[in-house]
Length: 260
Image (cartoon, rainbow, N blue to C red; front, side, top):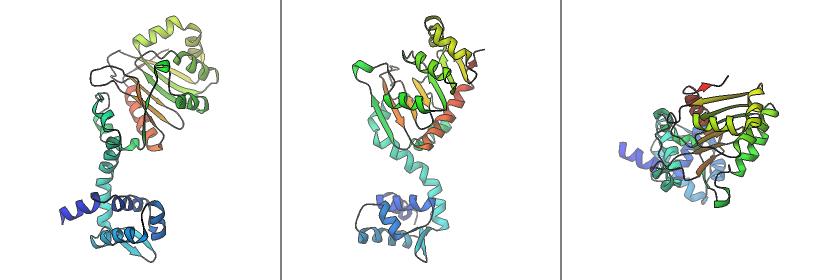
């Protein structure tokens, strides 16, 4: 039975997606068909297998998870989501140094959802992706960490400061020193804002390239396994990814000292 249940969940995309859909709420066969691709007969065949294995049941015109189905899905959903995230960009993840992510958040990596790997061209290597720049202009709450100096950062966050956008910015000490010494006007704008908070951490305390969470997205960039920053960035737009990013930022914030 154990092997049968495992194969029932994992060896069919239609069965797996049906179970994930029913984890949120019961659904009619028409709603199941609308969320999947395939003929009615093909989908009904998979639904029949799920019923036979005791994972779902039919009540009136709706299908829902059984107690067994709910128990199994609560345990397997994080694995399914993690596999989805890692398999879609397997080469990228294999080349990343992820030591900066605490164990509990690595366990929740599936919460990143749909991930876009962004690679800048040679003319825009040190510039944030346009998606982030647009999001910064529209957000009312921003949390950002940089371990490298981004030339647009002083201007972007000085503008947020002047608009009194609520933001927390964590910088490594060397990046902070350059900001303070070379971008005096922008630095002063940040320090004079009532809604901006600047934090500093030791250069080696956080081994991550960058992290930014806005109102509608998260940006995340790692060093590669050779500890080289290759300008590859992850863009995530799912709400679960933003919540994951907020938890990671809170972890980093505990390692930093607020500038007063």
